[in-house]
Image 1 (cartoon, helix red, strand yellow):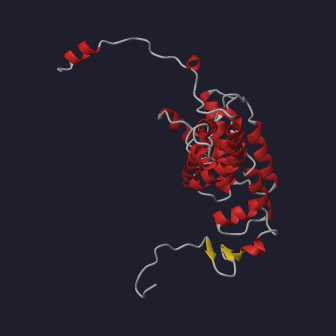
Image 2 (tube, helix red, strand yellow; image 1 turned 180 degrees about the vertical axis):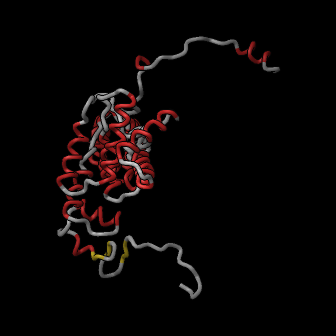
Length: 270
């Protein structure tokens, strides 16, 4: 690099040299076999070696989604795509686009928790008191709270409860989690919906926020958790022998009205 010129990129993530690949400064040869995939993933994203409890929680997080089956649009998209383009890469790419505000991704929930928690910390009110007024403002503005509700589970989402149990056991449960739980209680009371659950995505976002991950990083980790299931679905589809899988007409409703083109052209001034 010539003197006085700036680097194209500056990265602290890794460095490839003739003798080894360095991950956050640590030689890969010393990491592989010493730390599990979950701990090295934490190191790569957060930039530091996790505590044993954080590593175990990370392992749980990477096992927390795995597969939504055909209930997830990303899985359906992946299988449809590989029926015409039988490629694992094509299927995985299609599935990634199915993660967003309403499915898989905890990013919006993570952002909500981070921003609302900062507002609480800047206030002088108690947690439950502030949560009640905060929820009242949200409802008055007709804003939704991400991470609440599920089409099947009522009262308790067993997946979320399992995540909470492990986070508390591993020492990664903290004030950010308690804040989000207070918002959940306040919303249940204000909406008079005692059975409204905090779903797995909401719980996941709260734990990841407490562990210091950014909302965008949360999405990446959630997607990473879905990969084993997606690989299985895509492989099954590629081996099925079905080509160009389409939705049959019996599964769709169509507008059967007919229109007169000459009349429309005349009306439009043709």
